[in-house]
Image (cartoon, rainbow, N blue to C red):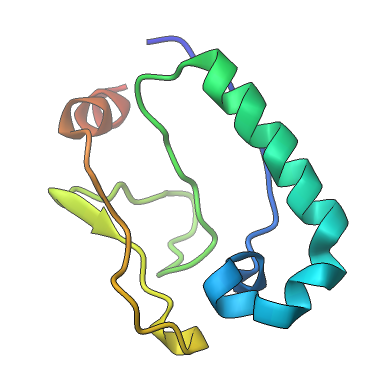
Length: 100
C-alpha cells in the first residue's frame, strides 16, 4: 500500500466550531489552510488514514498502534458534550504496519 498523501498539522480544539465558537475568527488563516488541505486529501483518494499523535503514553524507541474496532474523538474536556464522531478501524493496515 503506497503512501499517497501526508501532512503535519496543528490540532487545537478551538478549530472545531462547537469548541472554538467566537475564537475561530482568530484562526481564520489556519482554517483556510485546513480547507486547502482537505481538498488535497480528497484528491489523493487514500484508502486509509493513519493518524500519528503526540498524545498518550510515550515509550522510548517505539510506538504503539491502536487496535480498537472503532476510534472515537472526545471533546468533553473542552466543554463539548454533543455526540462524538467515531470511525471504524482498519485492522488489516494496522497489522501490515506491525508486521513490517
